[in-house]
Image (cartoon, rainbow, N blue to C red; front, top):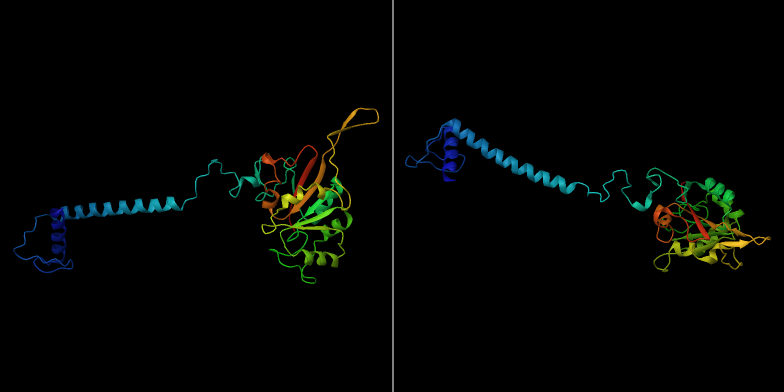
Length: 280
């Protein structure tokens, strides 16, 4: 109030020996100006209290700023979970597929380079192999046009494509004819190429789930039943058809239509998909 203000003015004037003259505060105290009588000790205490109030307000403001900068609270309240997306998190081992480079057989997901993919295909003999193009089969990036002599093909995947009778390149790279010419330059002429994207109104899941892609070109796809009878008339359970999908982007491998809820890798009772996160 006015009393406290007067006490501060009196203290400032007393400290400078300028009582009755204009001080640094810009306030003139004449001989007729009533000045409250206050001891120096009391004035100092009052000033300290005012400083503490200002300091407390400043601290509160800083605390609010820190809270605003802090990360949002995790709804699941689990610090071990992948901070990027629950889709990239193995529910069986409770590990991040990307950060921990964690393959999971139950999820139907492996991690490896071209040689690893070739070994998987030789061991499991899938009906079809779906290969991404950019940064997987080829060294191109971000949909750029493949140029002979500038870009290269992964040697392990090149050998695989040359040997397997049903390989489909599924890519968001829109340079279809250039991709075909580039692959032909390294002897890969039998591979099918499917370009997808928003402009084309399709995605990789559409191609992977297309029944016609699961058989080599020229062979009509027939839906197999879950069981068949042997020569003795006894039913025999059929193993589901297997496909391998290789991509360097985990988002593609975990996209809707590719990865089922709960980490399941089965499309239905007769089809199964093994996903491989490609690493050069």
